[in-house]
Length: 229
Image (cartoon, rainbow, N blue to C red; front, side):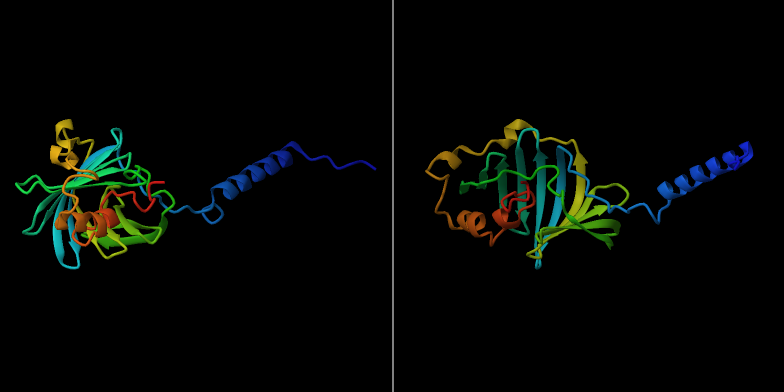
């Protein structure tokens, strides 16, 4: 029995159909798995001014982040209060001090250093929200922080800690650095074992319990809850 032979035109038509179906299969949005947006890693160096609100207690943080040199600096001004300097190093060393005549200082040795630029890896995407006048993508990280990033510029806009403390990003200067001389803790931080005025009530309360600034609990860049691991 003679086998049917496909004509050249029929073979061409089948080939075109296969190619067309393949194109539809691999390009169709309904078949292609959708992926949620991921947070933009922080720049290796930046400077930011943050407006903080914690149940009506207001403060400004002058933040300097310098990952290549393993350091982070929070200069904290409470409303009508003291000016505190929170200096953190990637080896876990931390100093919380004033530069006024009281020369208050407290040091601590943490198990982890500052947050890595990609500390938001693995965060859960929650969708988009409008906050502070910006349309933002929102992520949650281990029930610790809710992070808002501008959809257009990819800059951080706002974040909320699990304690209810809120940070509003006022400025964000990528690549800005602070001169090395400013990163040196004052000499009186090294005057006593375990650092400076270890028994000073204001410094000890702030550094250990966090009731004043929650520096070790939910400070802007602390890695003390293993978020940087």
